[in-house]
Length: 321
Image (cartoon, rainbow, N blue to C red):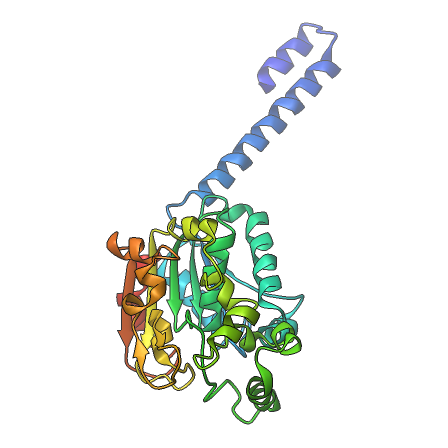
């Protein structure tokens, strides 16, 4: 091209300025095409993005928990994009919101974050830890775009809890305050609106109160009626993997991690998902998913969220590839 320009100058070509502009346009267009090609390559490197949502008392970026998990996934899956969700403007707000921000507002905020992230446009896998697992299930049911492909629930309480035997920071005044609030009136409007754990508090002795006043769990579990959109959207998942921790001292009852719970009207005997009305009437599509082999039930020894990297790589990593 330079030789051509030189030749044209030698020949006394009089429109040099126009030729220079044309060359600049050509080079600029080439740069744009190269950049676009690079972007396409980066977003199509054979990996599926991963979205993480932390549990109670944690944050998106704690180097000992979610930060370490993000790093581990990035090391195991070269080039993968991992988004660890932050609810709020900083880590402090993120941690506090895990205790005090209306769950429905959190889910709505996350849906907006995911929809605005161009790297998730083609779909993503999701990993929820403890309460973050049922929150991500709500995302799957309410916000199918971008599409969630696989949901990994790590110690999630899908039928809620009836007790709070331990929460992060056992001596913390926050944990004591939560227990008092739940014991005094989990289904009061004030507690429901401002305490996250109350929004998945499931009292089998007061089933009518739970169904009427639960702002979050009763809705996503189809307790007040069947939302066909929820049912349809959840069944779009390719896999729904649920991990139960057999020595769990945080989740009560632990069966909730496999969608089981206490039988209504008492607080001793539990029932499995398959024995529940939710499954028998297939109010959420879980029976159809089970039949299609989309549900995966995993168990591991150890306390809440305690597992080794070796166990993770053998049992969970294959669902993220």
